[in-house]
Length: 104
Image 1 (cartoon, one colour):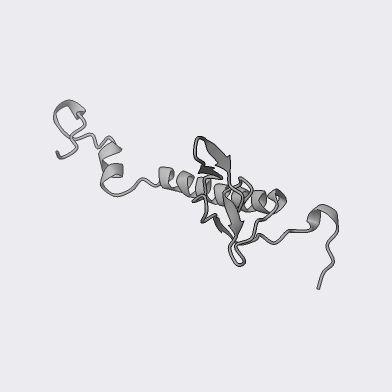
Image 2: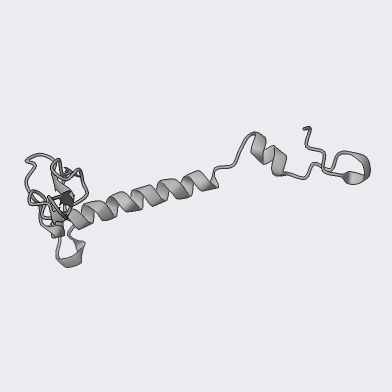
């Protein structure tokens, strides 16, 4: 087992779920106005195993990792062009005078 020091240490991400009391909003409707949720302390997230409140230092890295994964998937989805769309976008130089006949 290797010893890691300083910034080389990697924290284990906790399993978090949305708060059941406020449905992940961090606020609940009181009689006249919205109140901060007492169960999650206004974060909207709790521990997935114990359903107890977690400090922000545990929640932020998990949400950051989820955001990076989601942005990566969106970037991959935008770059995927293939099949009929790729053929349609190409200039195939068919038709009278070298016009772009796409077969439609």
